[in-house]
Length: 269
Image (cartoon, rainbow, N blue to C red; front, side, top):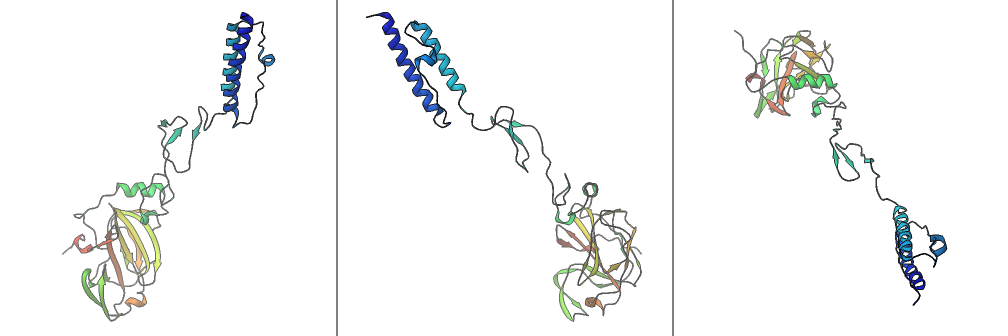
């Protein structure tokens, strides 16, 4: 059989297989490659080696024409809120993204009491130290007319009822200066129906001191205050404490669990 004829038949067979492969690969893309012998530069005058080289070149071009799926080299997938960046090959880049906490500032401690504080204020709170053995000052001088008691009930004269007492009520006079019972950061100043204007202060390790029935605050939210510093004044009592007379409500809590402040207040002779 003529060698040239055999070579031509072999070229046609190989070309048909290449066309089939290219059609499958390019089917999703919708592109078509015309694979006639003339377009491939294959003639019966070529020998088998030349034909095979041209077919390999054609297959390379087909392979390079297929769309790449997903992110290309060097690209990364970024998603808002992610704390790591993943590249197309699945590798994790050691890039740390900072998260925004409840207070809207980067890197601040997450505690509902600290919402809205600046990063500087929350950084100061993180440095505060307070524990079961820490001592506090009297915010005002006076007798305790309603004691702390969360296990049994206490009588409230104005309300004429017994109920638990989450803080202490210290007898005082309207206009008396109120001193910070401990060093700390003012976290909130707001008005409540029962206790009137209230001020909250972070004193460390998630302990929060609350001063109720105050007026004319001398400090603002976010301010750091020293123990003994004047922070406000005693106000006229709310309608819930009218029979008790002028007083300061004072409480202490750790992660919303009320603590007896008298266990921390220093008694002086």
